[in-house]
Image (tube, rainbow, N blue to C red):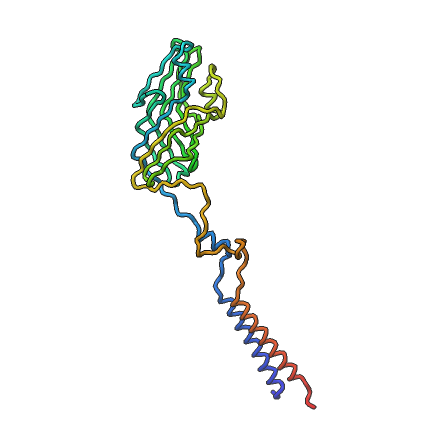
Length: 282
């Protein structure tokens, strides 16, 4: 092997070595999660705890106009309570609720055992409300579920069925230190199913109509009830991905840039040496 061939072989080997080192360095770099993925992982919310209710009370008058109709001269009727329910104008009280709710009030059910039996028109009209339940659907919203049975003025047997009778607006509830929950005069509005159930064949209630506001109080020892409708902000020392505008964007892989630069320089030097090696002597 002459000197020129040896120089070319050495130069080619140097170029291959530099390029191989650069590629090996790139391969050895750890995989980087995308900014959006990394941010989502850091802000994943912990599991919401379920809080068991120790005591609960519901107070609700159903509908003042309805009570007046039952007790008035037209229906000439009455109501009878059972299962622990009591009445003091203008509200019925269910004192022994049980159930559980999530700490953030995103779900949960509180059941209140007890019945009200309305009758009128000499017993031809009957309406029974049994075991109301409050089903939380969000921090400030809930549904009122009633077991309802009715007969029209022609008489008939009572057949109970659960009805999502109304929606409840719970905005403004007091959570105290987190181990209690209470609200007075929460607005109640009939659903379509509720209007149909209360009407049967003798009423004129319509979906969305206001019924009497209700009051509810819960005792949840050891719980941390919170009511929040806002969106959690990122930690102060954790900037949003993608710069000040908060738009996700790829991070610049500086290590790859440096290694790539080294490879380019090495290849450039090798090319010069090769060209010099091919230059004929004068």
